[in-house]
Length: 275
Image 1 (spheres, one colour):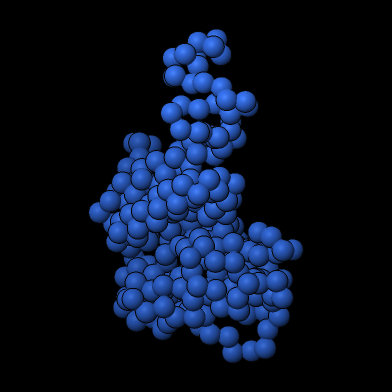
Image 2 (cartoon, rainbow, N blue to C red):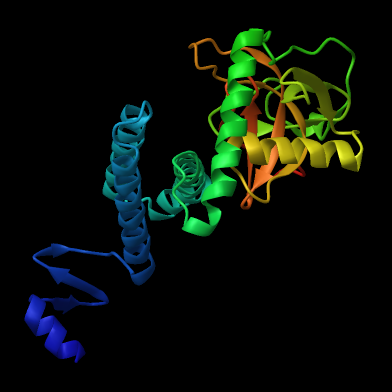
């Protein structure tokens, strides 16, 4: 079989090296790295197509193009191990988190459209009505900016190990703030907004109430509250305020939540010299 393959592809042996016109020294592991890198590029391209028509479409295309350039450069330099490390540290997490974000919004859209079977139509309609009523109350109330800067001296969970004091939100590493609380608003009994607070030291009942609020407001299931963190987070008005925001865990990943517009952004907790 080996001789057949050599004859088929015109390969000859010169000592221990096989040549096809020009010397080729790609081993099995190197070929595997190239194939895995190509697979990830295909996944990035497919993810970009899923984001087509959204405000993030251009960014997704840019990520694909830059990753493709890195692939081409490292392969040309035969830095296959560096290529694999790049994907492990960047591409894999990017693919997972931004796929999950898109899935969240699609599920929420289906919920809002009442895309369920007949048995769930009444329940979905009630949830949709409650969410719309809550949004209307928020708009009427003209709520203040809910991404508030730190006002007290604070302690951080793993603060000394964080890479930056105020990370920029591009899947940044964060530290959980154990003191500061954030304010969020729920609907009261008489169609008024009720201010509540949530923090790392809040009671179990308070955390469950916040999780229930998120399940209603975002259409998420099995979401858990982790704590609050200091980040610079995008607003829907183009401004990027720095302040304390909630961090939640959903389907295996962490997300910072902007309470001004209820958008999610992927984050990671940096601890013990690793993620």
